[in-house]
Image (cartoon, rainbow, N blue to C red; front, side):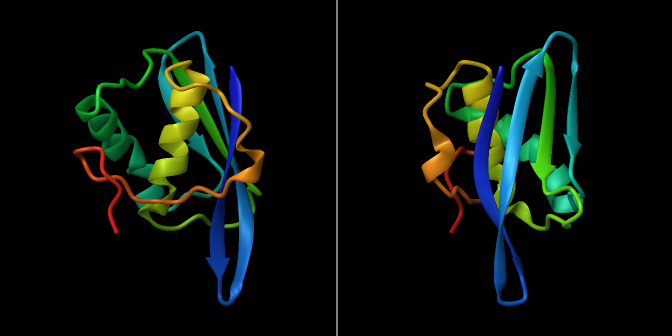
Length: 116
């Protein structure tokens, strides 16, 4: 199942919408593409712990996440929440609503709360 969630990247005083596409398919692995920095790449660990601590799981399937536009660098841990929501929706653990009217950003704590 493919799900799109929207976040934002700030460059100077400009903000750009980032489309986060999450696809769950047969197989195993976690693939994150679209010029993520190290904090974004490490999100899989924070997301796995946060979801487990609130009663959800990373699906035991192949997770492919595209952060578009691919030519803009994505920096920071604020992508944790949109990535987690995309994973939950694509895996059927969260009702797939229309996320096209939402901009979602937030860093997840290991206990599942959103850091301020």
